[in-house]
Image (cartoon, rainbow, N blue to C red; front, side, top):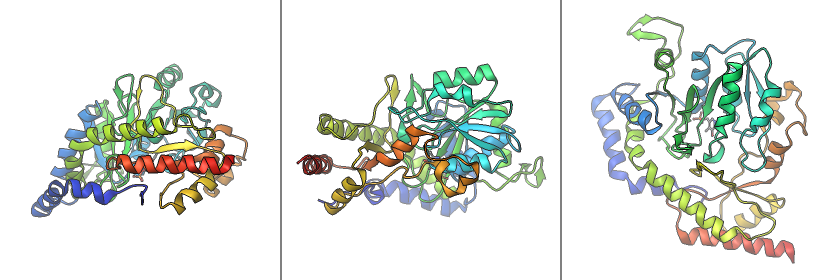
Length: 371
Ligand SMILES: *Cc1c(COP(=O)(O)O)cnc(C)c1O
């Protein structure tokens, strides 16, 4: 049985009428760059995130960068984040002129370990960016407590966590700003590139709204030196149509995760994702860990099961950041995850048969290793 890692076509076919209508409305109105369809999406996405404001931008990377810029972070500043993320988190920091300062993750939840933050704070530290990896929110209470005590901003990298919750609070609503990506494969995915920042701070929202549109408060009246960071109208319309389905899609992912867990929980040599109590994990990625990672992926590939690795090299060991001088051994939990993670097929349209097949083949693989 062929099991893809992700099936965007299946999702399109399930809502084809709504998507086609959304796209044609934008074309009929020639509202391509920013405009009313983006605004309509922003008005729906902000309350979905339990926030007052949402600002649609060009990508998740833009969202992070614009949030940092709007908070005044730049040359000479330091921003604390984790090395176990997609590189965009660090890139956004670097492209303000600030320096990313890494702290390791907790080995069970694979999110920022709050116990390590204080030792990383210096007089230059301005902000903390926890990443809600794979759809589970970082342990926000201790992070917010440290940020308040040390007068730091908190920007949530919620690019993998649309609709995730921590003690009843939605991803993006706890920090000063929350940044989302709508890259096609994300839990809420555009049909191209898009992102958004959410916040409850009206002043900050206003700066970001102006900044993403060349610093314009009205046409050709440029208050600040801004940038072109607008969301496409077509993406806004598609995202507004898809947002109505997001809760059901997240529920389906959680249900699939439950089936994987049921079938794999007693299997030696693999560890399953750890769900913190009081969080709602939305399983953007379902990553298991095993010391036999490369062999397992090879075995599953032969059975036509597609897997991923998120991410095979932690950010501090990437060539792009080699001038920071951080070596293997600096962040053991992040490095261990990079060595052992395997992301199993996970998307709302996955069938129970497919999940059972994947689980059975993992069990078969473990038997070959043990025999
Ligand atoms: C996808 C992602 C980003 C970047 O989003 P883009 O829309 O691809 O720019 C940033 N951080 C994390 C954790 C992501 O998963």
